[in-house]
Image 1 (spheres, rainbow, N blue to C red):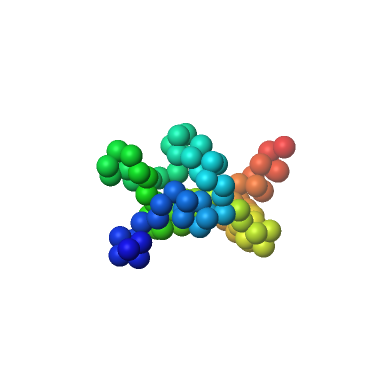
Image 2 (cartoon, one colour):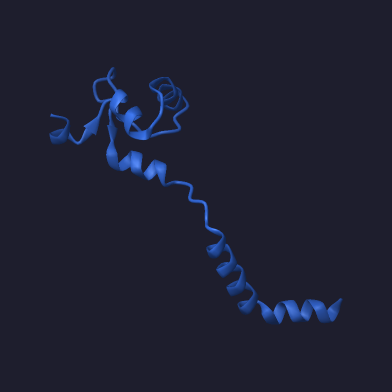
Length: 87
């Protein structure tokens, strides 16, 4: 039945996220994670919402940071030279 409705119970969601159910409840009370409460009692989670929540804060690799820094220096080279000239 879970596959038909595409929603998970709190226990299933905690297992899916690799969290203890008590910690998931704490996050629910803080409204830090999205969930559905259709009857006002039981809570359900959509897999898509949990996946989006897991991916909400991505840490860039050092290669990505270096690439962005190089791109920034190339695009702002004139401003940097001007600042060095003024100083």
